Image (tube, rainbow, N blue to C red; front, side, top):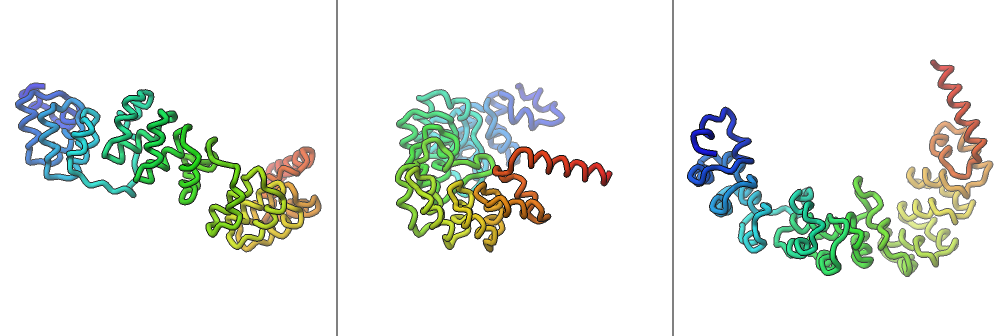
Length: 305
């Protein structure tokens, strides 16, 4: 875009963000006194190498930060850009990294990047080469390890277990890391007496666990551990009834849904306005009974209208 065309634009920002500018115009704009002009140019994919180099030294940190995330930098150039990064800030996958997820060589190069956002974006790939997985599983940025646990089908078992110690799922990936196919199951009984309730919750996932282990954890001092026992189909009917009076509502709600509840107790819960909505989801209710409940509910709604 020549200078005279740019000068005639009623709104220059789209051109600053997207257009290839005449070299003399670009050289002038990357040193413009208006930070908004330089900020728009920093992410322009058509910006020339000289313009990128100038903005990499910009006095504004957010402008240098935008330059640091450009796709046309080598990793050596990226490492040389001074910028601040808050590891606790929310991050999104960089689109240009996502486009390279199927390129094994690109993933190897970018997994070694100095920039956490680049490495986090690599970790979002569904599949990665074994050496890349091994590198990211040891990454110093725990968000990289978290994203690997959530997104990558090749995430290793030991890292998944490590992530579980501090993360039990997000809205976008509610089943990870515990629901990951590589999450370990054998040997989890060793956590039955672990000081961390998070780890004690895992014990019942061990295929060697028994109803006695369920009964023990149904009396755990931590509510989340009791809730895990309350959902176990091996819970004894007596413990299921006892947990209906648990001090924590989410434990009681889980116990209401346990199929080991005695039929007479479940019938009483279905007739109680406070527990009926949860009780009706109990899988032990026979299908004909569910039909009668739904028919009665539909009739009640029709009568009100």
